[in-house]
Length: 106
Image (cartoon, rainbow, N blue to C red):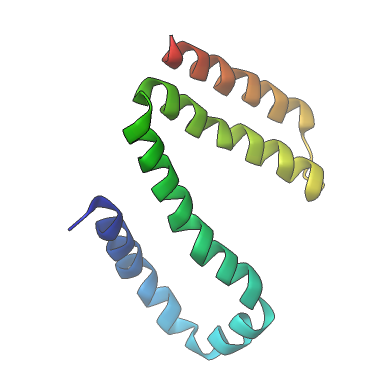
């Protein structure tokens, strides 16, 4: 069994009890959020496959730091799109993460 399949299986086992407790809300949630659910269902595995492909074609020392930069980008995008506060803390955190990325890539 691949690492990705094992991870999906573990997540399913952990989340199933919560899902069963809320099963009466599943249809409404799917109807309300079908497109975001579909986008995540398609792009999440695709992103993982792209990272693995990049690691096969390029040195891991270059790919891994770039992959970690998505945390910084996601945090700053969330601040801008969703109006989440504490921009100064986010920028400080981004600088720390980017410094770590720079250190890893040396």
